[in-house]
Length: 125
Length: 504
Image (tube, rainbow over all chains, first blue to last red; front, side, top):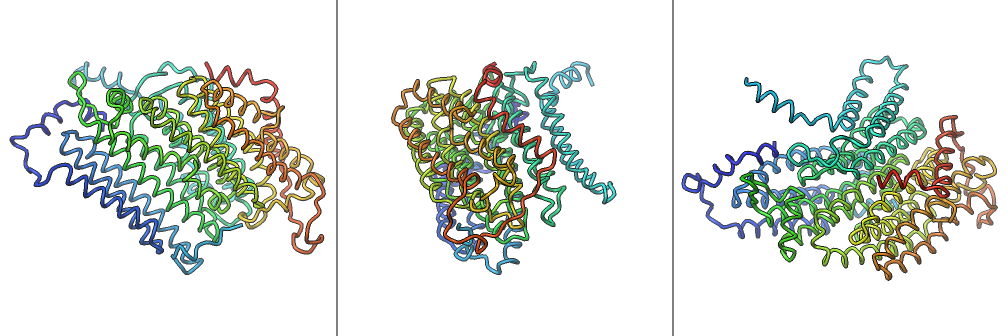
């Protein structure tokens, strides 16, 4: 699909047609990138500091979404569709990751009755 | 419909080039179908189907090794068929075959479903083969995540064991973290490269070739450099390089033994296949930044892996941490490959010797593991050599090769990489690596000693360490283990077939 888009200059034309562009964003590219970087940093710090596995998992999703935001912003301001298409792949992958991840967390909770990383440290020697 | 259009469609049908991957993926689905339709008493034949498919695909790849399409980009640049891609295909198929063999030993001990294990192994194998041949960051990310999510499931496969689940959770959180970091790097590169028009066709920063061109013209672009470093962080997690090696001991210990072997061999090799492509083809113009960063990483990896392995008594943790140091030597080979092209072949030679030796050791471990797969101490290897001379001999050959003892294949692998590093003038790194090899001999021989020699132990016989039942190897087990050990010995004396094949 991406390959198709690459070879269709038509899409570039449509995107570049500034006069009829439906939405003119209120902020420029740097604002979106800043927001994306802040979200990414928040997620990263959350993964490192939080103790509850579920909250850690939410922070991981936040990091993925930060990348998605930057991707869409780049895609819009540069007039290439590839980035916007990649977002769908990322969403699918994130969904698969959550499905497997929550299954593991639930199975672990059934065995150990805790989801706190502080108590999940039995793997030592 | 005009005939021109039909001709165009027929001419652009490139799916044949991916026959191995498609066959493996279809076989994975067929396993599940077979489980539904076969009567219960014939379910034990389903793993055989997986093994037979892998053998057939391996044969077909070997026969069509010099493909007519070699060097071509398929699907608008998503995939690039190359010599290294073909080598990677053979490597991953061989490794998965041996993982299936280990699984036939380990899985019957538990009450876990069996067919799904082989299903996921086959899916991961297909994704690994695609990963090694990807030529586009979207393809790369999707293939990598397919591999990683498959591994999440495999690591926590023995879900009745709390330690295994804990390992699964740790791998999940750290794996997802590294994927997120890598994704952000890909996005930064995409943003830095922007819109590139070549002959009226729009290209973007997802395509390796476009990125390489961009970096050649703007080697000091901050955004692209930061993106490249973030992507390499994600790869460093896969290979277990220094700051990202923290997951290795816990996950290796908790994962079922076949999965530990799969992680140690295939996952690591996938990381290096990707690293070679990225560093040599895509990020090569950034070598002024990459060489110092990767050199520090390699030295730290060698030191951290060897020092942490010194005090380990758990066999699986020991394999994991010693694997970290192997990643360090391989990383040195990758750095050398930036100035000495032959080093890339040396890296693959090393990976093949590592495959043979590790699988031999894991094969012995699979036979010795008791009901609790996570509890495999070196003390359990006592008297193994006397009771099961074959297992003891295979273990000694495998560990000797991993340590790099002269007549064995591992020595030649290390020698080729060290010679390449010497030619690339990486003297400091070389000194660290040689120190690391000397250290590694200590802990590998501690293991061999535990298996072969009477040891004086603090607790007198019969008190703490009970005699564990050893699974008697079947004729298949004996054949495979002997073949692995023999190949390791033969490759040490006579490398011509493998080297000439790698350098075709």
